[in-house]
Picture 1: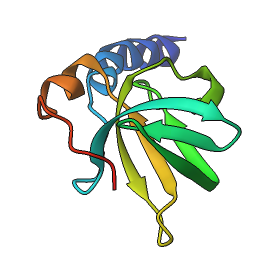
Picture 2: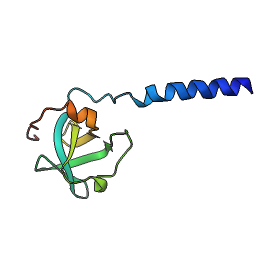
Picture 3: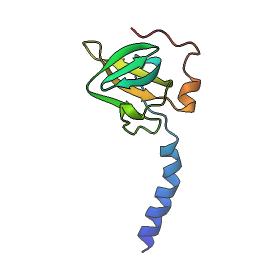
Length: 108
């Protein structure tokens, strides 16, 4: 019983540290505003782009999000695959947004 208490106390002490960690978004992930248009088509900074097969969109808590659940004008960082399709997307948290340049570049 004493061991269970120690484990619970240790878990409670370590939980805030784990929650405070920022995600590791690759340095080459470009900032953009994103919105869903239809099917596998999204809009990056006002230009249509296709999501790759197996594309992942992650929210600020790193959970997977369906493209249809995106709010209009969501600020993200994204990567494209070898053929130029949007492959990985991270919806930015407030902290990550504060570290993002004020002016977003045009999508390629």
